[in-house]
Amino acid sequence: MDVRAAPMRHARRRGARRSLAIRLAAVGCIGVPALAVAASAETPATPPPFETCRADLAAWGVAHEVPARVADAQLAGLMPDPEVLAATGSQGEFVRPIWDYIEASVTPARIEAGQRALAAHADTLAAIEAAYGVDRHVLVAFWGVESSYGAVLDNPAVVKPVVRSLATLSCGDPARAGYWRDELTAALGILARNEAPLDRMPGGLTGSWAGAMGHTQFMPTVYRQYAVDFDGDGRRDIWTSVPDALASTANYLRAHGWRPGEAWGTEASLPEGFDAALADETTARSFAAWRALGVKPARDRAAPDDTAEATLILPAGIRGPAFLLRPNFAVILRYNTALAYALTVAHLSDRLSGDPGFARDWPRGDRPLTADERRDIQTRLAERGFAPGGVDGKIGPRTRSALRAFQGSIGLPADGYADTAVLERIRAAP
Ligand code: CA
Figure (tube, rainbow, N blue to C red):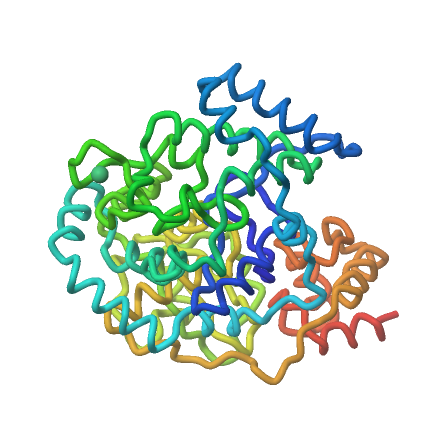
């Protein structure tokens, strides 16, 4: 999606989100292909003709976990899907404001549908909580964000054959060819082991254009490692079994450090005149230490015990909501490394629990910066000795840190937020 969420685990996958988000938005799901991330960084080269590449992929698969009969049946005669390649190339000129992203995902309809899902699957969710220690509201929030509680999985407008998509990407996206090849191999392995209930899947093994599958959008390698058979029918079925899909997500989160019984964090209220530089995204302080600084949970929500630690973030600057993040928030980020994504899941989980929503509004009057403007900020930060971590038009942690230093140097609130006001100030700065 155009927050450039780097999907799940591993690394950043430029461009892989926007089109899916648009496609899914059209049917009411703005989920992103969870667990999809390119870890490898091969040297880009001119891709070989598809037929040659396809034969190489079959040979690679057979050399690994795929029977030749499966590789032949799945790959012979397969042609690339131009829509999939187009999706990898899309780059947003504008970064969508974080509140747009959250509000497009956490709608009244999605909250209501999530509450119905909580009721309909209460026994299953209780059993998953008991087995994995992951809160049911968090699991249902992932489900809602990833697939609108499964509603999009049968929609031919948004799902595609996984093998064709991954073969297309393996051969047409040379910068991440190894990543896609490994995902393709894992997908062929799923077919070889007959793990997907194809008799109940009219479209065959389908997924997002990037190959993310099932109710909570697992990539094939993530499926291989973390999917579980929770309903006990002998099959790890994340496509048509809600218990299997949600337990697989719980298993993934627990394996990545989920702490049972802990919240993801909370919106925070800040005192007048708060020093925004303290919201540096990285410094963990106890709730007692935050309280001493005037920072406490918003709406007088209960705080955890005084020794519990949290970091403070201001995702839209000092004029927007603040959040105290506890360690489980970092686990949500393992599903998808975009802050907007993780806050969306966290917020939806709160809303499903009956929380009324953010106490403080977002700075909605701002227009988003263009890519050129974001690069301009980075260039000027670098020229002034505030290392922004490169000039790539992406406002990441290093750019925000550099911005805080610049803002502090001229007496502005050091919130690290890149908006038109800070752009004007840095352009005017000597
Ligand atoms: Ca099962």
